[in-house]
Length: 138
Image (cartoon, one colour):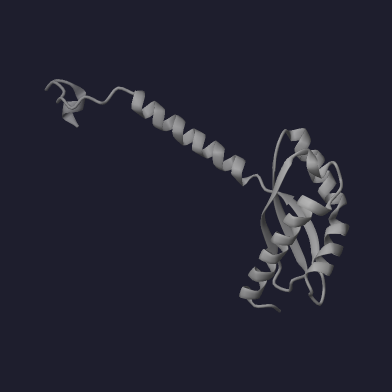
């Protein structure tokens, strides 16, 4: 089994090589339908399985089309990785869509909305309530 440092180095190398393949080697038109970038590679400890996370910018239709193109190109990507990276066994490649950027943007927009609501909300008065009111008894 490979050490943690080796796994991270090989994962980074796979990320770089797959990014280069997406730019230059993969000829499938479906892959080019959305702007795509490799965000991370999750490599198993025995270097046999690689989950490649990709971020796709575009419409939902373009995302689905791009993922279909990537899934059809997994054999080609694995073969090219075998030629470019000299390992005893080339890892099995699985493409996964990474939606963390979208989720992060949604969280940020909600936080901005809350901040905007707080700024527009009238400030609570600092005056003491009258002696006979319920708030004074607390």
